[in-house]
Length: 87
Image (cartoon, rainbow, N blue to C red; front, side, top):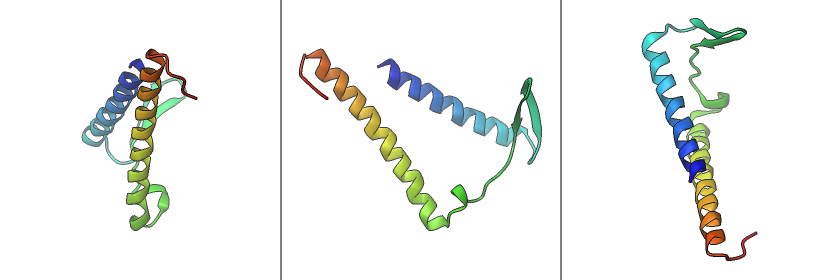
């Protein structure tokens, strides 16, 4: 369960940071966070420089993989809790 909460919190932090950057920073602006680490606002119009038709499926595919990993993890924990063998 801690894994699922961790994934949720990291995703939430990522999305909040993206919104904050879009609201408070100008394009190509860079803010030093810690030594040798800067937060820079860039805008990439296409995912991985792929055509738009492919990029939407890539994003959807990534979410499907994440959801399947979470379901697999939860099922494995549940089956171990009831002492059922699972590879």
